[in-house]
Amino acid sequence: MGFAVLGVTATVAISSALGGTLAEAIPGIALLAAAGVGMIASGALRLPRWARLRERQMEALATRVALPPGSGTPPGTGG
Image (cartoon, rainbow, N blue to C red; front, side, top):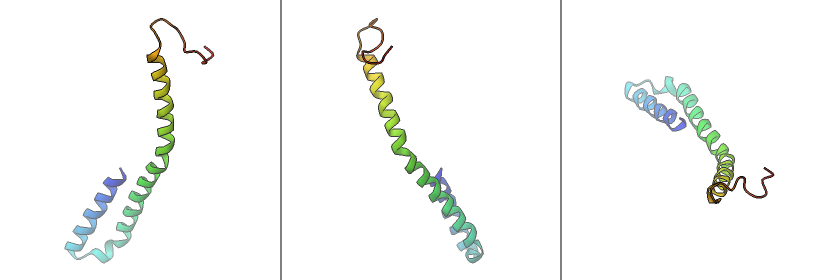
């Protein structure tokens, strides 16, 4: 989503420059650019936490898949 906002920002900047109204559009362009960068940064900051969660999920799934059929719960899970 952040990259889409940056694309819209570029479109607004180019069309404003071609229309001769770039000076009036600078505050709006700056706001759009800040929003796009903020969205990208937010996603980048949350990514490591999501990756750790996904790693735990995949390890649990691999443990379950490796068990012989009908063996019940994996050892050490308390179940």
